[in-house]
Length: 432
Length: 92
Image (cartoon, rainbow over all chains, first blue to last red; front, side, top):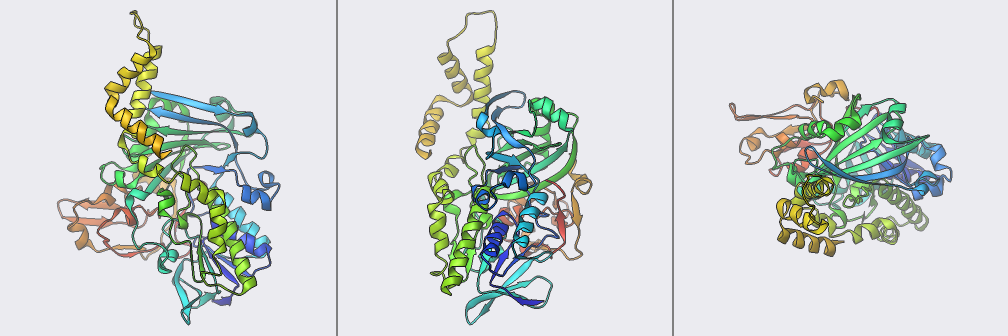
């Protein structure tokens, strides 16, 4: 196996396929290398594809063309204890009209579609190929080798879109040799079978409408949270754990997921459902401070490989950042080909375009959030305080009621402690 | 969900050759073994009796957790499976 290309993209996920698509549309001869037997086979996420402005630019009919499930019209947050929960939801009229704000999708379908669009634009998709080493020629990047095969694929420039652990970026010296567990999380997910009509009725949905919900307080004190999404005829229910917290907790992801599924309010949401698939994956959650060197001589790093994941707010975003970084990586490679310069300097447009976009701007703005979220009280004491406070507001006990302020102070004192509440409030305000 | 029945819920094309190989001596001397509880597929088992770590790559979800959680770098090999092998999600 040996062939020359004008660029090699490693990984046919949202970042890689967006890069290959952009380059192929500009006429570049690009190889898109994927280790799965098809794109998307290895890919897993919570379940929510946020609006993809960069793909909408390429496909003005994106929401008709892509293999999407439901569009999200209702988003909720739930603070949860072992037997109680306090939820807020927003259902917005604008979420029910195109351009839709987000969708549920199945990655093996969506990623495959996006890669096929890149192929239709002229890219060469090479599946079942795990990239092994970077090939250097006279000190410059000249291509890659494939694990277990002889020969190489050659190109003067690589786009490393090989996911969160990016061994390509490591071998190019762009990311640190080890990761900090404090900057990583693992997500586990149960895909649950359920008839479409049951989902519509249970969650108040019509047509292709979908519901997304995030949970705090469902991880038995391990730093993390939960998520729930409706597909057409299945539900995605998942938990995410900060690795630094999980590894010392002695608890296992699957036991915590089972406990989450058995929590009375969650049990009602999924009741009657049957487990279809179980999956897990790492999430780079370190934010802006985790971003590796984005550009080297002959190489660009995009998507999760570049830690472009904004998982620290209520909107857990990654795939939209990945896709945008891929498009921008493609544009930078096109510019480098025009100038005939694949040096770090020649590819520097990537960093500049990314910094000018929402990708780096959003991550920069949330720079201090990852640190704030290392406060363990968020994951147990505060959800307990919220539920206790709301419960007491509604509770009738045949005695004179306390006013709301004293009820709040009572819950805060019992569940968190007033001094800690003040300190946490101050650091949250500073971080946000 | 029963993690022992992972093969009923998730598809794998198992490679004969393991993509992750441990240096067991390092695991024996480890003071944490966060891999055992953190691995979402329960691929790591610590035997207190034998003082030995066992790793089975068959049901590995390739999530990367052990690679980050292990602070002793106990891996003589940690890479993704050869192309076409390993976990194969159908939906998710």
